[in-house]
Amino acid sequence: MQRIWEAASADIWLEHANAGRIYVHNHLQTYLALAVTWQVEWLMLKGQDIQFLVDCPGGDGTCVKIAKLLSTYAGRSTAHVTGVAWSAGLILAVACDRRTALPDANFMVHGSTLKDGGDEDEEDAVFLAARTNKPYDFWKPLLSDGKEHKFGVEEALEWGVIHEVIGGGG
Image (cartoon, rainbow, N blue to C red):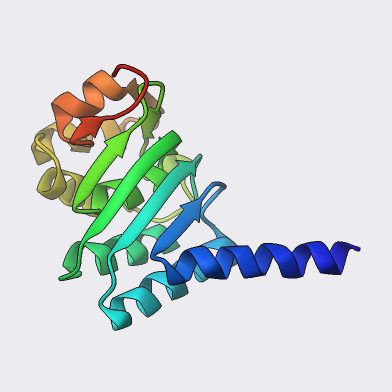
């Protein structure tokens, strides 16, 4: 029975991928990160618009590769944050051209001391400054102090992390 469920889930997942929809609903690491990377590369080869539904509490350094791919893509990419966009989820969402969120969405940024090692703070600060309304000098301290910085849709709008709050009267 488990194999039937896995096969049905894979069919549904592939059907959404063919339509350009990618669900990021868990930590973006290991197999999920690899699968999302392949989906993005495949959709880019097809020249298809890419839509992410993001409810991602974090991930590993693979999200930087995905973000770099998306930020250079000539096609349209959209992120819709349906829950949380923390850490890797935030980087993935900000990489998209168009970013929306539900009114109760939540965001979080933190530095490499809380990540998988390595000093990613500089690269992340430059990336976030280039893709949002806030400069490098705003992002760098948030990424360097070793703390988690959570924020809601109001700050996300003000900072340019998202462009619009949709649904639920937001």
